[in-house]
Figure (cartoon, rainbow, N blue to C red):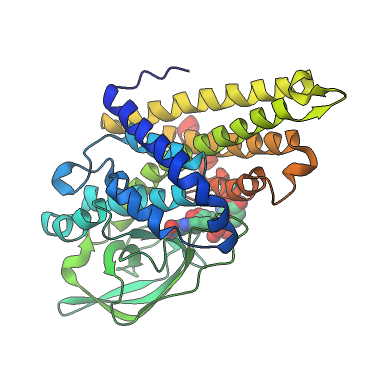
Length: 380
Ligand SMILES: Cc1cc2nc3c(=O)[nH]c(=O)nc-3n(C[C@H](O)[C@H](O)[C@H](O)COP(=O)(O)OP(=O)(O)OC[C@H]3O[C@@H](n4cnc5c(N)ncnc54)[C@H](O)[C@@H]3O)c2cc1C
């Protein structure tokens, strides 16, 4: 398949593919079984420039574009969803709000080490009572002299524990209703009163750590307000648009990885004296999987390109995220079906894909939330 990539993009794609096949794939199963964070692989991603791939060189990144970031995430997701999610949360959710809303001093202090991969980042929006309704933030930040005092908690935050920098939201004007009166803050790990919970016991993505953050009178210097006071929700919504592209790159990569597994298995597995690939019941499934992946990938690169060109892409990002995540879950289901009973076994990789993929329909705006965004545009 041809996607009209530039020479630079193909080079980045090949580098990511070699890394995924030679370094990530061989250790993925063991990391998943041990629920182990892939520290060595994350360090290699930093060396390869993957943790700041689309951040300008001035701010410590590789200076490539959003399409290139998609290519990196896609190649890694073909073999390891957890590592792809770690990169996604760091790059698109963590670094991008800093790039778009940070001032010079904040970018120098926090974005440069993040883009170089020296300091991993997290994005903290979700709270126990504010999930899809992210404007329902209960965490508060009250100005006291030169500091904001933060109280409250967050949940389901990716990269907890390993992150050194957290971008979080807190209500700064209790008089303002809904998503208004919320501000964004940069919070350093180790700040007194800021504690991190144990990783959640999730159904999949075992090597990616996700969990709670607790703020008990955490004093954050005034200069760590990110963007304008009471305008934090906009910062996070822009971050989510970026995140929806990155998570869709995961969806395309994981679907391709599952198709590759199905093709290999269907050629190998014999029933009724023939490879199961020779039955149309199987080969038509493979054809549909390929068609769905190819069309979604084309739309993925289109939306990433819109972002690179500075166009508005909120609706397209929601269409992409809704469609790609559901496509991925569907393709993986078909691949598992082609694997028969073996697909249901821990001995075969497709079982891990099946567990990992479901998150794609939930994180960074559920499928239903994406439909709210899309229908709002349709009916406008
Ligand atoms: C592995 C993992 C990693 C995550 N990483 C992060 C992270 O790094 N940072 C972060 O901030 N969050 C993160 N999240 C949280 C994630 O973004 C939320 O789980 C998601 O936004 C949904 O919120 P909720 O779980 O509270 O579900 P709820 O909002 O309670 O939704 C429950 C169900 O109701 C539906 N629903 C809700 N409102 C409506 C409506 N108006 N119309 C129709 N249906 C509706 C939802 O679509 C869903 O099906 C992560 C979650 C997971 C599982």
